[in-house]
Amino acid sequence: MRHVFLDVETTGLSPLVHRVVCVGTKVGTEECILIGRDEKKILEEFKNTIAEGDVLVGYNVGFDMGFLILRLLKHGVDPRKLLSCARVDLMEKITELTRGKYVSLRKVATYFGLNYGKTNGTLVPGLWEAGEYELIKEHCLSDVRLTEKIFEKLKPLVTELATDKQKDYMRRLGVLFDEDTTKSEASRLIDESVKREKR
Image (cartoon, rainbow, N blue to C red; front, side, top):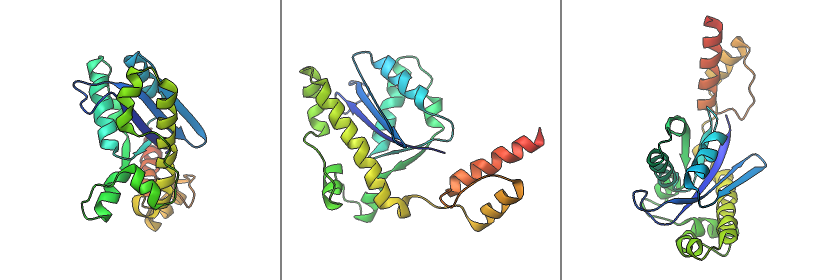
């Protein structure tokens, strides 16, 4: 299981009217920014970077995923690979902790003493029209890195580690795991091992 830190930049708020202009991801130390005029190409390249069992982590990732899925469908590309991924929405967790109050990524970054950067998502449509692709890339990458840092701060609240029962079962099956293996990852590893044994 990989955590894929994700940010999507668009020309507006409606996937029925607006389009994706930039997708940023970070997996481990590998960062990827996809940007360009060919939306279908960006979406297909992003989809090809996702693997079965990945966990997509974002700030308001529901918005990002809704946009990605509807835009993939518009271009005739099957979105099921994305639908099969687990998701962690950091904004949902912050909203829950602030009793239903919306808190922007900028405010959360400031709260944790993290540098937000110069640009915000509301400026992206104008930057796109002006051809300021480098500024969009910088903003997207900054949001991806912030998402990872905020995830680390919230990690005790957003990930459940494998239970002792799961660990014992994995040991009996000979499944390799470590102390950071999550509950959902343990379930997947156990299922895969049992399926292999049945063959």
